[in-house]
Image (cartoon, rainbow, N blue to C red; front, top):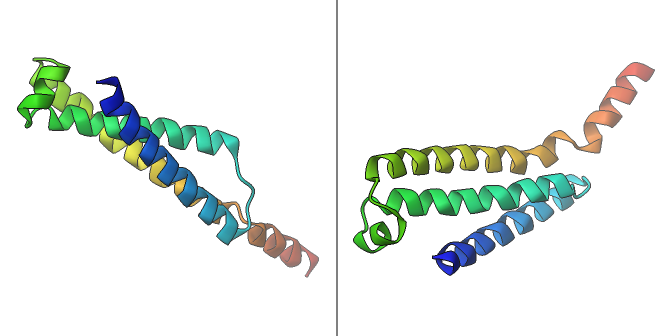
Length: 111
């Protein structure tokens, strides 16, 4: 089960990091290690959430996880929604932290 969760989580983490790097490059913002760490954690939570939810519908996964289907469904849904929302929030940050807003504020105060 470890590899079944680790490999997809690593792939999703890599996709998030590449997307974050592209957004930072496009918005001319610095790469933030705290954001990268959070994206990696969210990727693992998304994969675990998907597995927990899917385990209530797929018999092979059900055997690997547990027999508490209702609790697994609830926990998986919470993990999936929370981590997805947090990942989207982190991916949107580069646009909010751009130097343009600092320059606009400086220009407005100079006028």
